Amino acid sequence: MVSFIRANILLLNSKEIYMNEEQEWLKRAKRDFEAAKINFKEGLYDISAFLLHQSVEKMLKALYVKRFKKLIKTHNLIFLAKKLNLSKDFISTSRKINPFYIESRYPPLFVAEKYTKNDVSKLIKEVEVMMTWIEKNLS
Image (tube, rainbow, N blue to C red):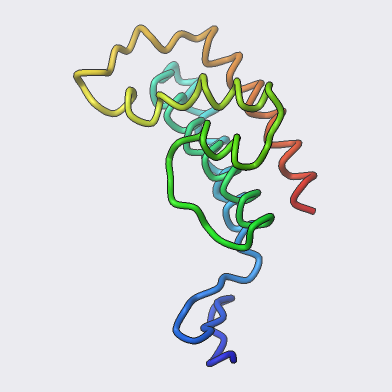
């Protein structure tokens, strides 16, 4: 039984269920992806890499919410990609990007030189392919 509707949220027996939640995740993923490209152009490859992780995570969560009607709380891209039975290429992209969530943020693990222009440029292209595929699968 629906208690009331406010700002695109259904309150169902005290549990919030977001209408079109996957579209919200996708919208945020696209925003992070654009920010990753901007930081890349500015030569901030470590920040770009971190934002690529955020973008992929949100894309995968969009697809997960669409398929399973619930949110899974994790930052592990490999785990999400495997749960979604994605292609080996997408799992490979997830594997490359997965460490950026931690490595790009914590000084003991952070080495700016690790994030090269060439490597991040390739990942941007891979993430763009992934985003296009996920967008098609959300419709």
